[in-house]
Image 1 (cartoon, rainbow, N blue to C red):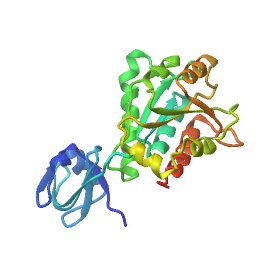
Image 2: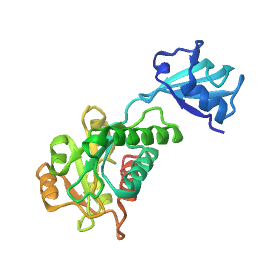
Image 3: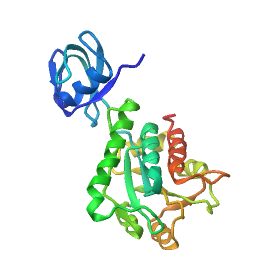
Image 4: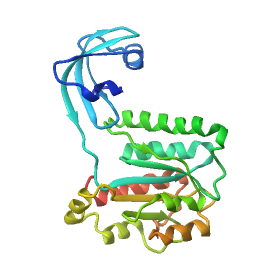
Length: 260
């Protein structure tokens, strides 16, 4: 059975043989909720690739001691997978990034598209961004990830195109597109070993999937994205909601890269 996983930046410099002491941020959930005590094993990750496995040496609701048995580091995957997720009502955008995190997305970009009904007004922006961060962290721990997705600042309308780079391979998921994403991924070569190795040597190579709002991506936004080389692609014969389109596209990308 998999060990429970907790989050703390304290493990960034951990070494085998150390005894780490965590505060209520770890101890509270580990002891009160998971009922862990001395002798139990668990893992702690820092969200940046470090994973510590150890045995609980002391436990209370406010403090937990962990005898470190092993420390491992997970490198960043290349190319990185990016989901541009349009804001949506009813927390559908949160559902989208939760699933994307479990599937293995590396970066997420909240997007206030021109036809998005939901928005992040200035007075609520920090609170709503923190809500996204909490979902990304919780989903990462559920998926036992040691690296958490990076959340970018909010992009607006056609301004999305300006934050993407010339080294990005950008796919816009669109129901009117003629080429399927599966075919586009094959044509671009991410499943080819040499292409993957080449991408692995690039710091900025990314595969970007753009998911619009329920009302669709505007013509102006499509034109702006096309101007930077983005391709409109079709997921399949059915129309998916904003909350599920990104997850479906990411599964295809992971498969094309040979990770799934």
